[in-house]
Length: 201
Image (cartoon, rainbow, N blue to C red; front, side):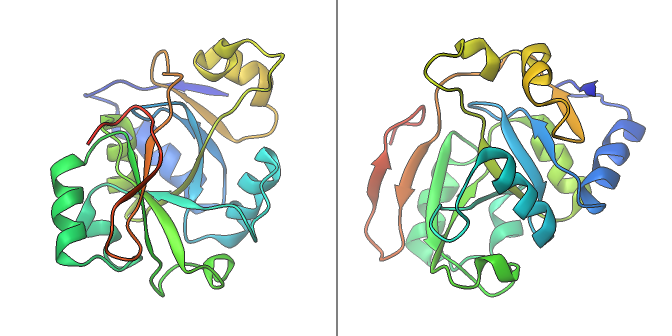
């Protein structure tokens, strides 16, 4: 099922519908400032397991990332020192994933992890969803295999063709990007670029 949303002036009933799906443990596909992504309520472990199953992720070894409305709303889930805060403040919202020391508020599936990725995309749709939800989303970008057309990662109708029967809702926010976020490791007080993506520092 596809739901069309816009950069602004979305109907409250549409946002409430998405929030209800997420609160019920549903999985969505939604737009970011880079690629489209799978998302679910980041505090609901069964929903996280569903996302990992759909994408084929090993929850013991794959970095898990959460998407939030703003820096303040993720401060209880990760440890952010002053230098990290300033760096994030200067570059977020934007196409970056910051790997930070994990806090204690995340579900049990995160418990053996020392770090978690943080995303605050420059996309008003996901910002509106996270703000209304009052919690972060677990997030992982869509990917296509080598033999698939890249449009299966950027066009909502084609995304629905591929994943529509495996998720609860696909949010159409227009054509997506193919470039992924820049990943920055900041777990030990030193900045290390793990993957150069769309964002530049």
